[in-house]
Length: 317
Image (spheres, one colour):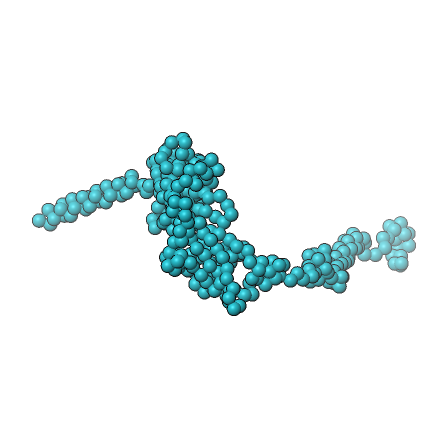
C-alpha cells in the first residue's frame, strides 16, 4: 500500500514539473513585442515636427529599441504623402520635420492625420502608429494693471478660415531657464476659462535676467490628445538685470590657478621643497664619505724592512 502511494506521488511530481516546463517554454517563445508611438510638436518659432519612439516592455519598464527604420506619411501610405524617413537612435527616438512642400495641404485643412510605418527588421514585426491632430496655434500675452503683472495664453483651433479659442485646456505658463522652465505663479498648470483664456499672476519679481532685464515667458500645451505639443515664447523686461562685477579670477589669489598663486605662497612652497632636497643631498654625501672611510686602513702601513732591522715597531704618525 505504501509503495502504491509512493508511485502516485512520483507520477504527480513528474506531471507538475512537466506543466511548469511547458509554461516556461511558452513564456520564452512569446517575447514582448516592440511598441511604436508617434507624437506631434509645434515648438516656438520653429517648424512643426513628428517624433517616433520604439520601446519594448521589460518587466514593468519600457526600454528603448534602436535601429528601427520608420516611414511617416500624411494620410495614406504612398510616396506622394511621405513626409520623411528616420531610424530610431540609442534612446529609441527619431524625428521628422514636416517639409515645406506640404505647405499647400497644411494650409487647406483643419486636422492632420499622420501615419508611421516601420520597415521590416530581423527579429521585429512590422508596426504602425497613427495620430490625428487638430490644427491650432498658441498665443501668449501680458497685462499690467495697478502694478500687478499677469501672463495670459489662448489656444486657438482652426475652423474653416477662422481661429476659435478652446476652453478647458491645461497649459503651463513659465519662465524659460537653462536647466528647466520655472512656473510664473504658484500652480504648475493653468486651465483656460470659458473664453479660452488661461492667466497667472507673475510673482517672480526678482528673477535674474540679462543686462537689459529681459526674460523669456513660455506658454505650452503638452501631450494633448487633440492638439499634441505646442509652445510659444515672449520676451519681456520683467527680470532683474545682471550687474557685471569685476572678475578677479586671473589675479594672484588663493582661489586662482597655479601660475597665479600669491608670491608669499610660492616662496613658502619653494623653500619647503628646497629644504627637503637639501637634506636628501646632504644625507647622500655623508653616505658616500662613510663608504670611502670604510675602505681606508685604520692606521699607517708599516714597512717590513724597518721592523726586521730595528726589531721595534716604528711610531705611528
